[in-house]
Image (tube, rainbow, N blue to C red; front, top):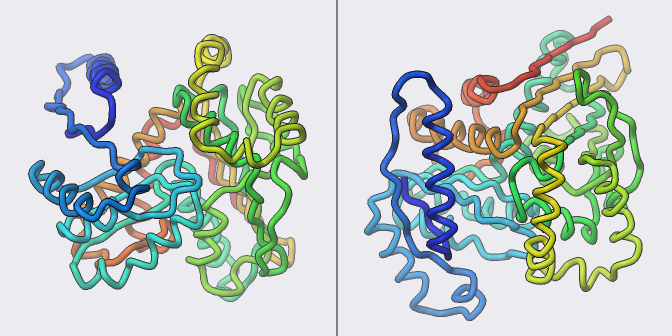
Length: 376
């Protein structure tokens, strides 16, 4: 396992945490991978359009002998260049990212033909959400289509997410949320794309169990974009995605920031990242009390309102389930190269057999896994 990043100290902390988690996850002697560090800081070079940078990066990655690349270095908001995917295409190795910026996902997708020609498979917007959540939606739609035997039916889809505190994900999830507060939330209404005001249109959603009912609000989620691009035209009548965190004061703070801070400041990636890092000691302190639970609920209702499927999945640690889901996508690409044709995919575009295997991996550490279908 090769971890690429800017900071050796951050690498050492990550390595220690990974090995500690592996040791504590089993009573038996676990397999402990060799973990090494690769100094990698491509953002500044990217911004400066360094002509030699791409060639040097290709050689650097090639020297590692990597079998696949996983890009998790968020936040992805405001990024425009698919540099690491281009490197993987050049080298012919599979690629997975957890990109949550729809425009960058679309840029990745534009490289699909080139990836196909080079014989590599890539998935963008993978991970837990976005990613596994898109697979949950596709699974729910497929179940209702099989019940009704009508593949041309349209559906109303509501995606809802809850994360306690930062979910142990740290500053990145905080800064990403800040950035999303000044970004329109894409929704689908009557089959058409509609941008709506972020952190609006509150709904009370029952996540069941100890999580109970949470008030979730609109927040841009690339699942909306990728599902609309992936599913056959006419499948989606309406689609929206909402989010909530705990304690409730954080939700109130997000609303206050959205109302009072100018978008030019909220949308400043460097400033929001620094603010997140500055606030991290307080956030970590609160995390000790609220936990790290991550819960995802997808409600799919047929156009005639008679048939409904609810898919509810909860893990007790966001950081762990993001890693589990991302690894599931990578392993699927490595193990199913004869099934998945080369190209760049959104999660819901993967074959149903791949979808099922990835979801089975995600299910392993879930504390709640409910798939309920009601038909009349």
